[in-house]
Length: 441
Ligand code: UD1
Image (cartoon, rainbow, N blue to C red; front, side, top):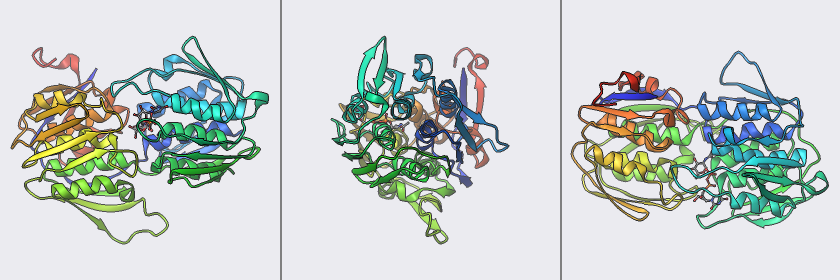
């Protein structure tokens, strides 16, 4: 299994481009199931989750048309008879659940293995099912699979409330919104997720001929159409990668220019960075047509200040940046308070950061971070994608060597992260853990 060996204490400086968003690209890829024509996506990151999704779509009869540029993916349905998303793929990637709505809407039938829990918590799909049932789907659970049928082959538009105990659901909104594009009549989703990835999906669906309005607000209206066509679409840049690299600049006292950066999608995170003494300066004039893609320079004060934040659905502070910001605030001069309101159990990185000398006190869904002067390198275990990113940040700031085991979690969401960080001054080596000295293995 791959492991990172990180030599800490090196200041980052230089320019990095933000890649296309993983979480936007996954439901965009699935939208190819909604049409018989080819769908082309540009700036798709090269990640394990994306490859798994393309594999799943292949099993569902959607073939990839080869292109010379690996970041361009063209998919086209050639066989609409396969509607079973099997457990062995679904268990590698929860986002497979996004195939349920499009399959049901286009083929009238879907069988998708029920995703299990994962390191960040239980992660139910009840809201996905509630929304699809509201569209008239008949849904049962059989042998661990969700089996869904549209009566007489077609879903019916409906008005529904899609909020749950923890607020809106991102992939649930994507599922229902995608399914409703081919339903008979009008669908209104109240308490829809407002994430930029939902806006990106609505933009693709509209360019395929769908009639979606209100995406980005809690009320999305979809007027069903009879068929969708192919489209050519560029994926939005990854706000979580951007936020992670902002933390990388800050935690190393560095100076990074981030190009293709979706600053408008990071307002809550920017507030916290600003409170901590991290400066983000927009460079040049915005291209009016595309405020999601700017260049900015990230620098910080020598001593970070403490800060407080609570994760919430967008436009609140993103849960996917909680671990990275916790790593950053371990070095602030004072006490910070972090509360997790989206996945209250998402704290596996707390114990690992503590191994590096961080002072963290967890009480339920809140962690008090007592800033320390220095982190110390140690062997640590990556537990989930974003927690791994937090450990890499901590390792870059720590004194000495940090060994991050199980970086396959990180590879699910960050394309060649170590190469990019090394290009701006980090010292990170990827090795097979079989090659580690026995004491560190
Ligand atoms: C997506 C993101 C993930 C991010 C999360 C929250 C993708 C591929 N993944 O996951 O990186 O951390 O949004 O921003 O885009 N919930 C229910 N019932 C449901 C669905 C969700 O109770 O049917 C709960 C969840 O347990 C969680 C909250 O709602 O507490 C939000 O989850 P949700 O927005 O659905 O997360 P995902 O879309 O799975």
